[in-house]
Length: 112
Length: 117
Image (cartoon, rainbow over the protein chains, first blue to last red):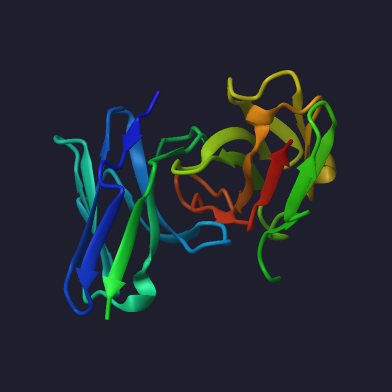
């Protein structure tokens, strides 16, 4: 049951421009969402999260937007840097349940 | 503390053999998770511990899989009678796990890559 979907397997962006990574979910009970970044040969690294009581959370160059009615979240990276090149996973969970559901990932390539 | 560690990093085994992986979480984290990841997919939840109690298991975790977390510290994941379909990256993660969603962000180890021949 693929409850979290990332429909774009890859994205290529020029350095300095905005990167927008998208994620859709089907379970309306999800109330906490996270983004992870993964470099080759490493485990995923936590990037940013958002609770369903908010529609935006910002941390430096990274902003996550949540649209509950559309069951959609996005991660904006501004400005994009070559070091941001990695696979990005979105994940979701239901409040007080500790099973996390991950999307299949989007590979971001930031070109110098 | 340098983060979550996993051993071994790579394991090649023949079909039918048993394998055991170890995960050492961040010391103050009381929650520990095991995931499996195959090529082109995101991590798939296998099981979760709150301290030493195994509180949830995925249907993906067949009877050949068993996980333990004695004394609420390190954890082991054992796969008995391995099959070629078990070939995957096995990831361990830990989290602080405070109230509500606070502390739910997980810190992952580098994973153990299992190849069953």
